[in-house]
Amino acid sequence: MKIYRAAIFDMDGTLTDTLDDLHISVNEMLAHFGYPTRTLDEVRRFVGNGARKLMIRALPADKNSDAEVDSALAVYNECYARHCTDKVKPYAGIMDLLTTLADKKIPLGICTNKQHFAAVEIADKILAPVKFAQVSGDEPGQPRKPDPTRPLAVMKSCGVKPEDVAYFGDTAVDMETARNANFLAVGVTWGFRPRSELESSGAQIIVDNPAEILTRINFG
Image (cartoon, rainbow, N blue to C red; front, side, top):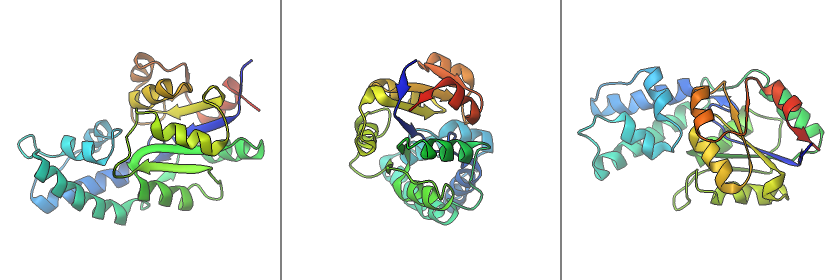
C-alpha cells in the first residue's frame, strides 16, 4: 500500500466550519452599501475561490464593476477581521486526526483561498496546539488554487515530494488543486459541497469523517 509522508489541508469546509462567520461578514458588507443580504446557503455556494470572487458572487448583479468589487472587498475584509474567529470551530474529529498525524511525525500544512491573515489567526487560535509546517492563504500577487504554486510551496516546507502528499478538501477547486500539484486528491463530504461535486472533479478518495482518513490512507 502506498505510503504518504505529508498531509496538506484546505481550511474552510475541511478543517474548520467557518460558514457562520463568513455569512455574518458578507451580510455586514452588503448592509454597509444598502444591498440585499444573502442566505447562509447562498454564501455556502459562493465560497471556495477567494474573497474577491466571493464579493463578485455576493454583490447584486448590476454592482460588479471592478471599482465596486474593490470597495466591497475592502469593507468585507474589515468585517471578517472582526468576526473570523467568532463562531468558527474544527469539524468533529479533526483535532483527533491532526494530533494523531502529528504524533506520527507527519508534516502538516494548510493551503487555502481564504485571506492569509484569517487563515493564520484560525490556525493559531482554533487549531492549537497543532503546529503546521506552513499556513498559506490568499495574498496579493500570489495565485489562488487550483494553481499549484502555493500548494507546492507548502509541500516544500513539509520536506517531501508531490507523490508523498495527500491533499484534503471539500470542493472541486481542491480536487483540481491536488491534481495540478500531483498530490493524492482526497475529498471530504462534511464541508460546503456535495459528494457529487467531488466525484465529478476527480477525487481519488472520498471520506465521510476524519477518522476514516486513518483507515483509508497509509501515513508513515
